[in-house]
Length: 261
Length: 325
Image (cartoon, rainbow over all chains, first blue to last red; front, top):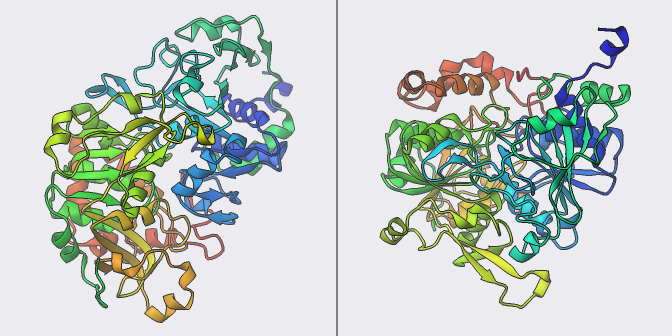
């Protein structure tokens, strides 16, 4: 390994956090869960979107996040916040007619389909599942309400599936008019960020396509790690994290490497 | 509803008086924070079974009740515990073994259901879950719902907006009210009559508390009425909702209690190890829960050194710099 490469060496997880952080703009209200999504929101605030606001479903508004929280109920999200309330208030922000469309939700799941619908509930039969996952939590609420969602996934065949075992959180449902037909908000998923690539959704068909791939990864490799085919004609290589982005992520956001590992 | 001036009792009595086999219960807190753990452990010690448990994302408390075999039916939004258990381990095992019956909702839906119960209305509307399997797939059978007078006939109902397209909304999901037999919450401060103060996030504790027929409150500090009445705007629940007040320092341990102590990462990590294996989980229950007669004895097993390590930093409200790996 060359010296230069060592200096800018980074993990897929770091890349995911930074790619997601780049999606967040000033004026966004960022709903985040635990793990990498929290890091992405913190990184955005420190790097490119100081006027974005972080909120948690448990009711904390714009907390200081001096240390990284390990759960959305962690006392670390209560310290130095603008206000501490509860779930009823937090989800109302996302459903509220003037604030809801400004919320960017960051979600994860066990399975995703080509329209960005998510399963975080069960694999196999719902009543007698082969594998049970935690369930919606606030994910279905966020996916139902907010202006846009960003989805974190591991790039694996078993996770990118043609048919979900259980549809926990709505993406574009069955296509361009899916959400409207069911009565959901105008919002929906805008990006899927994995350990290899970023996918987006076609403006007309709402089908997933490959938008960008990371340094050292080929579109072919990405397709080999998906259970369904997608358009790769629009794909480009995504710039790796800058030294500054990496420094802030590592030194400011997660110095103990609790999430980065 | 209880206007008595002195509701102070001990945990053993409070649990045996208000929680029985088959009771419908809810517990306060959220994943790793302010779960009424001392009360959860007392329910386990009293071997109360077949509970119908309502939870949004109560995390640790829910997993321990399920693991100890206390729960028969569960209505839940999220069975995870932050980084300590992406899926709660005993919850996952019980679901996969078919040992408990589960009905899935979302966090907001569960909160609205408690709020409806607190307000005394049969349901509340939301747009959440339209077009998903939360509306399409039901865990409880029709017969089960019909047979249990404490359950509504339907999991939820989708309805056209009766106000036309008012507020740009074509359809709503109506979620049914919950009125548990008993809710148990752990708070920072309470007086003998039940005037209480939570600090930090309240999660859905207020809605859960007001929706219940009986309410047990455990508290870090039992304080004078005058102290809480000096700043009444900071108190959350009318005292007449409260039926029992129990003074239990570290009553949320091993979960956190803002401005008092952090969660104990050692306990939660060890718990996850025990929970992965049936035999080891029995060892856990025997040593920490059945092997202690009350919460103080459990805390003695942990020792002062560990408890000191999680003491809240007065500046931040949590244990700043705590090793949480």
